[in-house]
Length: 183
Image (cartoon, rainbow, N blue to C red):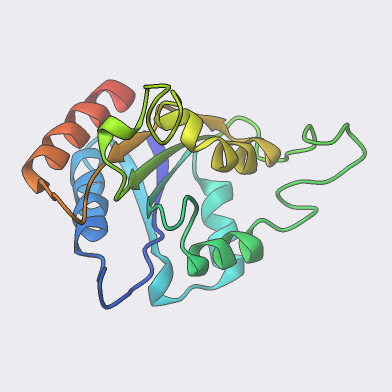
């Protein structure tokens, strides 16, 4: 059995209390728990940095369940990364910049929620100017590449505030997990 760390990076806001991210987080766990060893973290519930670092060292795969706030991670989740991704443990040494990650052999998956609608991608005339989901997450891929993690295909739920479709998101997430983890 492999070890998976699932992190819920949602940060509470009155207009976005986090029910969808919690639902997707729970769905990931429920779909993988019979085939994998699972540990979890809910960032807004607090954490111990050393314990989180130990979870990363234990894990073969890390799944980041997070909303995308202003095209990046919520502030509390970014602070978590800043604290947990410690020099000398996650990266370091004298290798060329970007080639000194110390978490080699581990993979990660981004599972994201967006207010951006699906039509905003993959078209040169739309907001993301032809980028797909992976391209719009490139900065987060670089963050994880820097520490030596290898990407798995990302998941995105779109238009989550204006036109939420929970059944569609759950169906698509289950299919995504089946494709990526063969469950």
